[in-house]
Amino acid sequence: MGDTPGDDDATLVRRIAEKKDERALAELMERHAPKVTGDLRHRFRHQLQHPDIDEAVNRAALKLWNNAHRFKGTEPFGPWFQTIAHRAALDILKGVNKKPASELEFDPPDPVSDDPDDQLSPRTAWYLEQLERIIDYDLKGFEQIVARADVAAGGPGEADTALLMRQHNKKKNVVQATRSKVWKKIREKVQELETLRDPTEVNP
Image 1 (cartoon, rainbow, N blue to C red):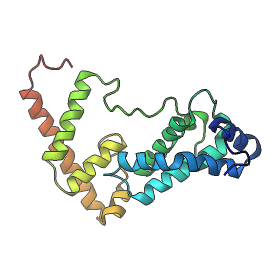
Image 2 (image 1 turned 45 degrees about the horizontal axis):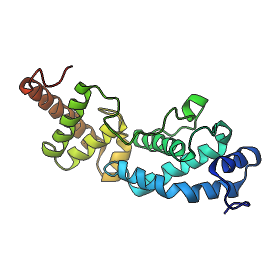
Image 3 (image 1 turned 60 degrees about the horizontal axis):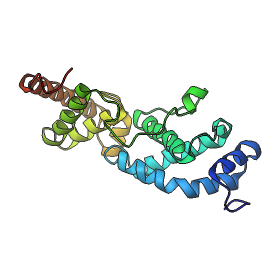
């Protein structure tokens, strides 16, 4: 616990920034790491294993330790730290192993939204809905794993091939062949659904 029990989050961050106070960091992690870890385990339940999630939270804590002075204190600490941990998890999923080199890479502009359809166009929302259905009902086994990992990482081919190999004991050519097959199948299915969709249902 911190030297001064009851210090608010902003005060604890300031103690890290000004004094490199390890107890302040420990108290912040005690308050927020369990919730952040649980959220990441839920969000990435199909893509990352528990040690990878723990690594993401540790990376986020290290970024906080090195860059605490960048926390402005005008927003709640919890969502701010959650966003940093979410980015760290995405980096792991994509196979990125870099430290933040600039303020833009570190400072999260907005908390992670809990609404997956937030600010999506009707066309994009329709596509994502069909994509989820295709993954659930038209793909099987390792195909689903590859598709979900790529989607979580940002799109076709975005998930780290080496991570998929390690997690699922697959050879590189198996991952690559499965990925190619998966996205070919998804594209063909989406095109088929496009021809069947009522053009007045969703505006492009």
